[in-house]
Amino acid sequence: MCGIIGYIGKKQALPILINGLRRLEYRGYDSAGVAVSDGKKFTKIKAVGKIEKLAEKLKPLDLNGSVGIAHTRWATHGGVTEANAHPHSACADDLVIAHNGIIENYRELKEKFLKGHELKSETDTEILAHLIEVFYKGNLTEAVRTALKEVRGTYGLAAMHSDEPDKLVAARFGSPLVIGVGDGEYFLASDTSPMLAHTKEVIFLDDGEIAEISLSGLKISSLDSKNITKYSETIDWDEASAQKQGYEHFMLKEIFDQPAVFKDAIRGRYNLTEGTAHLGGLNMTSEQMHSVSRVILLACGTASYAALVGKYALERLAGIPTEVDVGSEFRYRDPIIDRNTLVFGITQSGETADTLAALREAKRKGAFVRGIVNVIGSTLARETDGGTYMHAGPELAVASTKAYTNMVAVLILYAIQFGRLNRLTQATGERLIAALLEIPTKMKEVLAQSERIKTIAEKYKDSVGMLFLGRGINYPVALEGSHKLKEISYIHSEAYPAGEMKHGANALLGPHFPVVAIMTKNQLYEKMRSSVEEVRARKSPLILIATVGDESARELADDVIYVPPTMELLEPLLNTIPLQLFAYHTAVALGRDVDRPRNLAKSVTVE
Ligand code: AGP
Image (cartoon, rainbow, N blue to C red; front, side, top):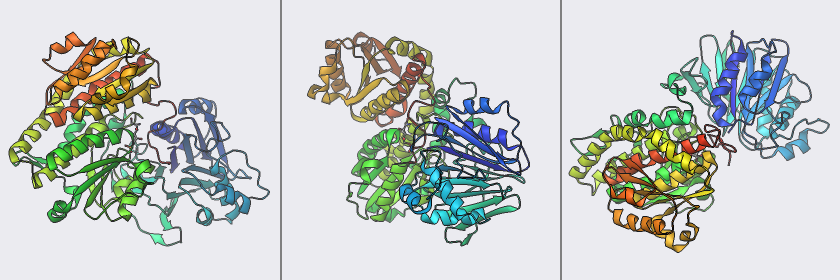
């Protein structure tokens, strides 16, 4: 949540900072601010609303300077006001900081250190600025170090002081920060997306590290003043993949990215002739793999629905009992874990606080802990003992689409890999791999129906609520379809396993209440069809996701979206796409801010 960008070099800082904020806006977007140093003093400008509001405010000002920091906020402490926007100063205007995270003991710090200090905002960040001011004796790095030793909580911090105009100080604990190394210049940001236009050489700060960044070099040390040597890494995402490329929204572009990035997720990870998969990053000996008696998949939101698909696949192909738990529940319920439990954290960002905390708990209890992650070098990727990058490329829309698909792809590959160790036959493995290879072409067939799905979405856009139904492997698809619709269109929706309807949800049905049902041709087709007929009988408008060739679906439904046939376990890779498009077109028809839905941020780095 929230995004920080910093620059120090020879160029004008402002355009770099503002463009960087635009890239980070997906992390939070209720207010933003920038501070630029002209070598003597700072000019600090803030605005409530999106980055463009700040950019407009800055237009008439001639803000020169080649050092600066900026921040885009998603409020956690204090309302959405200009005073609460970052960067913050202390009593004097010679210090500015931008901060992500939460200072948990801010009340104690205020009591103990800040007598006589006048606070101008309601934020915990401002308390931190005052604390650094208290300890400042001519060396910003040391003042930050001393202040942070008093702090309990999480931070990704950027600080500048006008007495040391050629220096940026950064510190991290629990909230990511990356340093970009350019030619005679440095960048600092919450993730790599704002760096891509400038450099691909990056250094990821770890928890408890402080970086002093100046034109004469970069010094990294620990909170207790030990020097740390770190080397830069090269990131392989490019700038073009982080652009809209002619699509109206990032979400639509990312939906259409799916055939290509799906290929990236499976490339080099399967063996067709042996009917198996091989995910090298697992870092487990075959003995350890054989010892796995239980799998736990930890995730939040959309990632948890991808995990549910993974549960079906792991149980069916590998015969390993698999549980799915959302991070926010798992971390507090004293879970039972033993040394034969394999725990995967599944996360696009690799920064989701609840998933991270749950995984740390599993690690403490001695499980094998692995990650399925998209963002390279993210916290979860670095904290696990192995795992797999899902290779979805930068996902900037708050609503996750292509990362979901690639999570499912990686989980299915794991299920095949574990399956081939025990009960999965080579023949079935071969069929699965062959079917996986056909998925990109079939995804394109679904995507080609976008305009028709738009017409359907426009027809139902004024509904007050909707129900999504699925069974078996398509129940998680229904959950994901419902999740997508509510988060970007703000229409209330629920998802049910179709067999459960008779136990309560049937009471909702009627002409005012549309139902989206996934009724593709698989082993539960007849059962699903009976549930759909009940919906029909109760006169709810019916939108069906059906298999190409199932003409009888047209007689049942008001609207049918056809998807190509595939093996049952792979159906979520296709069946989710019409639901993503349905949610997208509904949100557009309602005039919603599709890429940045209200009250949500892309990366949820607070509890
Ligand atoms: C997805 O559309 C949501 N924005 C949200 O549920 C998301 O999947 C969740 O916050 C988990 O994020 P992660 O994959 O980065 O951990």
